[in-house]
Amino acid sequence: MPVYFAFALTFFNMTGVRAGRVLLALYALKLGAQPFAVGVLAATFSVFPMVLSWQIGRLSDRFGSRWLLAFGAAGGGCGMLVPYFVPGLPALYVAAAMNGLSFAFYNVSIQNLVGLSSSAQTRTQNFSNYTLVISVTSFLGPLLCGFAIDHAGFAVTCVYIASLSLVPLAMLIIRGGVLPGGSRHEKSSGGLREALAVPGVWRVLAMCSAVQAGIDLFQFYMPIYGHAVSLSASAIGVVLSAFSAAAFVVRLVMPRLLAWRSEETVLAYALYIGAASFLLMPFFKSAAVLALISFMFGLGMGCGQPITMMLTYSLSAAGRSGEALGLRLTINHLTRVIGPVVFGALGSVFGLLAVFWINGLLLASGGAVTRPSSGRGGAAKE
Image 1: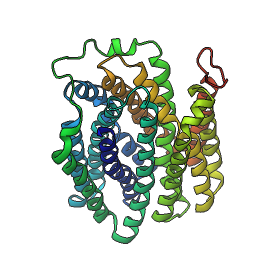
Image 2: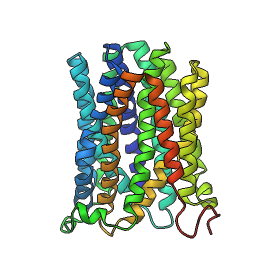
Image 3: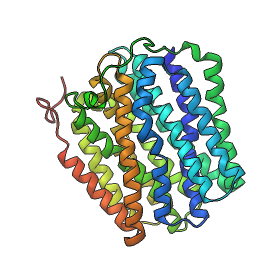
Image 4: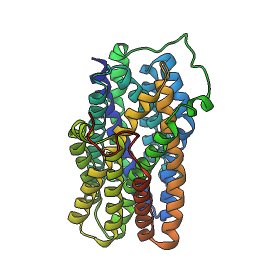
């Protein structure tokens, strides 16, 4: 079935993407980069997704996903080879940009593919399963990256990660024909203004941004904090992987959570738990305790992405689901570009404590303003 093929493609490509982000952040620290420089590196990952996601979604609606996914896999693999052949901090920025390009092509196309391959009855389960695969890759990527760095060094780890992209590329060339095509002769009508005018879309986009910003800042600034308290690359990888393990656990029970409470109520609780995790982290230096806090963070924030993804797909007009999902990623990555730079500057001036606490307060504020939709305020769903 196309949906299971999509899950397999996601597994191999996103393991490389997740590993690459951790590798480049740690590599930059190894080369002496300051928190602001690492914040700019984090923002570089999001430049192409911010600029291109909406257009990629429109292309996915019109032409299908096969060759968009192939281009993304090839671009990401080539990008990770740049620091191997050209050592130095500028090469890391090139690799980060190409890693972000791969992520844009993959995320929009795969999410749309999952939706198109699902019926109304299976859509919630399939999106939940998709995010479970993402959780697995988020667990394996940092873990493999940390141990590879400790045993083979930064440059060779770049080659290891680049080789992961060969698997989905070969799958797409050989078996990509099973994927559904697009509406080649039906160009999407309307532009960005029309897409933003859909009732409820701004509310969902704001939720997406809050969740994604919290997750990304945690994943980028946890390595900086771990480096500051003298944790090894392997220990940092374990701490980050604890977040992904928790996200996997909470996504297993998500259908039951959403049958018990509304999407907005679950999301509000998730933001509160994420805020508490950020506020607690600077008080501890032990890898074991930090892993527990990371696990708590994953329990809270792991359900945010599938909820907002399902809401975005359900809001989309017929034949424009890729465009809607692309718009969601565009807004997310606009936040990703601005957030790391702002928080990197704060970290350079006021220290890492300010980064964790301010972001914790922002997540808590997001939870406070997230309200259940009309008629479902905190009650069990029928």
